[in-house]
Length: 99
Image 1 (cartoon, rainbow, N blue to C red):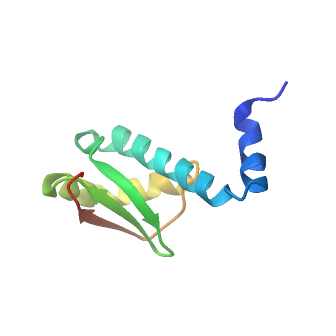
Image 2: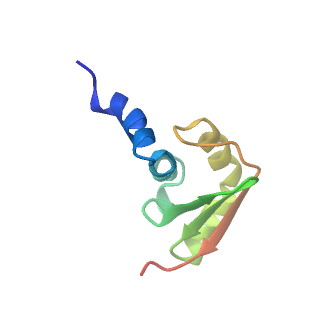
């Protein structure tokens, strides 16, 4: 018997959804890392985009943005080894209140 999690990558590729699955995994990893490493920012930050040299993330308010910037090196190192993560040099934070 195979686990559903083992089947998802192949199925996503067959359906042309591999990029979306990878993005969902990276977003989930980001949320988990923020909760573990920067608890005051938990739930108030989202991964928006993985760019060639940077991660673009949003913060709900200026204080959360500052917390993320202060912990940028730690977050970038952790994200480099997280599922769906990638090694990037810069963390770019935009303050964007939730809708």
